[in-house]
Image (cartoon, rainbow, N blue to C red; front, side, top):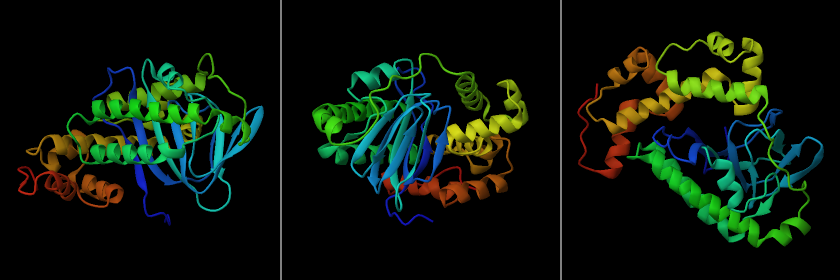
Length: 306
C-alpha cells in the first residue's frame, strides 16, 4: 500500500468529448513503479513528479532524472521506460488525444521528451488535476467537455513554465535533445489504438480477449504483453475499469436508474457488479452515488436504490 497521503487513483475520462480536437483520456496521481513501453503509449502524456524522483530512458539517447517539481511531455507512440530512482516516487499524469492533440501540445511550448521545471506552475497544475479528478469521480454534468477545456489550460500552463525556464532546463538539467514524435505509428501502436476503440465501442458486450486480440491481428499472449507494456495494466483490467467508470456515469446522471439495471446494461449479475465496484471504488454503487449527490445537495434522496 502506498505511503503517500494524496493519491488519486487512475481514472478514465468520460466519453462526452469525442468530437473535440483535444480530449482527456485518463488522469491520476500514484506511487509509480517501473514501467517499460518499447512501443510507447497510445496517447500523449503530461507527467510531473509530485514527490520523489524518477528516471526516464529513451532509445538511442541519454536518460535523465525527473525530480519533484519537474515535468515532461511524451508524444503518443514515443518508446520509453521509467522507474523510481531512489525511494518512493509520486507521479502525476494526464493522457490525451484528439485530431489536434499533438499540434496543440507542441504549440503550447512543451518540448517533447525534454524535462522542464514547473516553478510557480506546480500548484496550478495540482489544483486543476484534482478538480478534474473530482468532477469525473462525482459524475459531474458534461465532465468530458469541461475536462477538455481544463486540459487545454493545463497544457498552456505547463508550456509557459517550459518556455520561461528554457535556459535553465537546457543548462541545469541533463536530458536528451529535443525529439520529434514518430512520423507514422508502428503496427503495434495501430493495434493498440484499434483495441482501445473496440473496447470503448463494445464495452457493454461480452468482449473475449482472444477475439479482441484476433481483431487487431495478434495472438492473445502477444496482445496482452504489448497492451500491458503500453497501458500499465492487462487488457481485461482496463476493460473492467472502463465498464465500471461508464456505469458510474449512468448512475450519477440518472437517479432513477437502479444498481441492478446498471449491472444488467453491462451484462453482469448485480451481486458481482456490486462486489467488483466495491473492490475498485471502496464502496458500493449506491453508497458512491449518495456520497456524490449529497456533497452537491444535502437534501438529495436517490430514487433508484436497491
